[in-house]
Length: 408
Image (tube, rainbow, N blue to C red; front, side):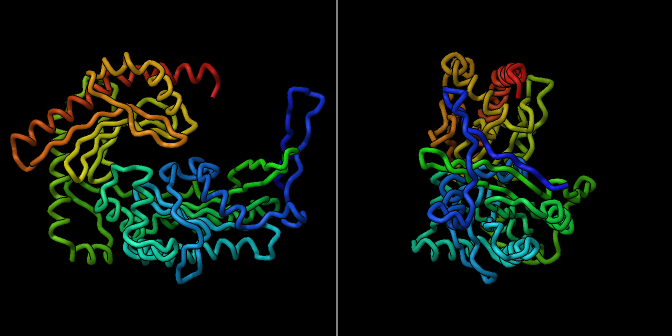
């Protein structure tokens, strides 16, 4: 069955003046749409991409650059999450003569080349593209989250590159024909690590000369089965080639990784949660753990992190346009009372454009190698996590119920 989409209708204060909007096509003269229009929109407004519908672990990527050079050709848009997950985007006008399968093959070539890189390779090419020195990649990511630890970010990025853990997006202006065939073709790659999505960004002309974009996901590998191997306690799984490379590791980095591992093991032994319904924390990265709060779609988490400078932090993080974001709004609306219940030391996260400022608390403990200081640090972190759960979990549950009553 051919996929059908109706044009949006612009409603004014006078219902009689409702006006269907005209789609902007590549051949519409002065209003012509070019591929760089899509590139610029994505780079300037990455939130236009419905990434959460494709793979939620890639939400809120930081736009790094356009036309990132690789041996397989330039990547139209390159982004990366603060957790080191790459997002590669190929922009196409679907009236161009290239076949749909050729476009998919092209972005798969980009992914293949990218999987041979390390974080240093990405840093080098980003610097070349942006004509900057230093570490432009890290600077851009830290502009979004100043708490990013450089070593941890580089380790995560390199590991994701080696494993081929990418989000690949093919973004077009108006995909109409062959969508089902493309979806079938995507499933042929269901054994790989990456997520791949086909996104339509149709443009419509507004009466005042502006443009309206209505993003939608047309196909994705979200139904792709990822292989999960459960190993006996005490065993771990390593990939042959990567394991060989990792054995030639930096002793200082290995020592730091072991220290982080021991720290979180000790934290779990110290942590006592009063709320019997709160699931136990899970490790997210070597420097942090997370606890899922009762918001649908896994849209709200309580994070506990340890930074490179031994700053311990407890903070909320959420996914935009979800019940989790609504819960944050409810908490902030009564912030002074909530702050007192949290013990009076909590603050609000640094302000970011288009983002809420969730509650957080932090404290620096120097010389964590000292048993006495380490014990104090673990006790502080455990108390903060337990208090945040006790105070915020009921508020989140109530906010979610209110959100549902209004209709999701």
